[in-house]
Amino acid sequence: MAAVNLVAPQGDASPTPGTREEAAAPPGLRHYVVRGIPLLAAWAAVYAALQPAATWFAYRLLGLSPGTRLASAVEFFVFESPKVLMLLLLVVFGVGILRTFFTPDRTRQILAGRRESVGNVMAAILGVPTPFCSCSAVPLFIGFVTAGVPLGVTFSFLIASPMVNEVAIVLLFGLFGWRVTAAYVGTGLLIAILAGWTIGRLKLEKHVEEWVYQMRAAAPDAGPARVEWAERVRAGIDAVRDIVGRVWPYVLAGIAVGAGIHGYVPQDFMAHIMGKSAWWAVPAAVVIGIPMYSNAAGIIPIVQALMEKGAALGTVLAFMMAVIGLSLPETIILRKVLKPTLIAVFVSVVGVGILVVGYLFNLVF
Image 1 (cartoon, rainbow, N blue to C red):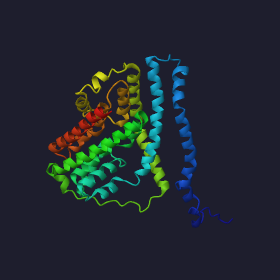
Image 2: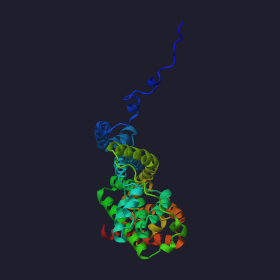
Image 3: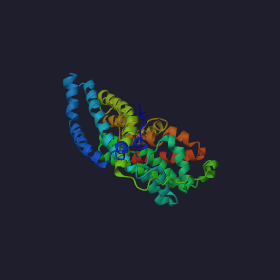
Image 4: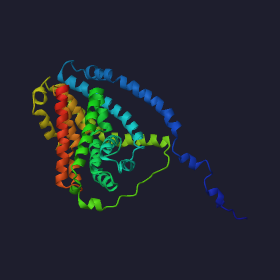
């Protein structure tokens, strides 16, 4: 009997072109567009139905009596929670795409060698779409300084990036509207520009730890020559998974506290503590806000509820900026690269800027 060869020919072992390789290829732009249009339409329909759904949930499903404190708090929470999270999904997706154009390394290359005045403005603006968190403060600072970015320009970026970010913008727009959002973004960028410019004028380079200047700048990562739009869309989806996945508990916790204030704190109660007539309210808000550890997702819903109960706009903005812009963890981490004198100047200059914004808004609005 002839032997049967059970071993396939070598050529058959390799996958046929157009089978496995193509099946494993990531979807293209058309795939995302075809699925994205109906998803966007569904998003708009659900968003439009949130208020009637919250009213039905509180008064029909739960049977709460209109006008009671509990009913007011429940309706606030049921309406604001999905509204803010839905806005967050949409804007974070868009910012995720935008960040494919402005990576930290690309930002460093743009700012390297810029004059302080122009550099401060560019750094503050680039700080908005560029990824940043307290844990990355030290490597970003070292990368900027060793690449030749002036100290004041570096600080403009470090101030603007956490203070004026996509989470803060979405929450402010969803809870306050465009007027307060524009005021916060404008004044936040102005503080970052002026504070960075002031620090640059003071010539405080000697108060940076010596070992920082001894480090060699890392070679810039040029990255791929061309990024396809399908890759940018995937970056937006990844940003939603990462950012929304991390901040949603803070959003719900902040809205829950805000709902409690909305339902149970008497109207105009906060006017005596954080109102325009209390001259000491703004500095007190800044002093209380600096050591607090929170982010925009946790603090903004509380701020909105405080305003409903009579707190002045300038006071709550000052409190919010102090919590977000002068984060205690970031300040502690920066001690690795900054001497105490420069840290004190940084906190003082930004703190004074926040005070001015608080009093100005209490005077104008």
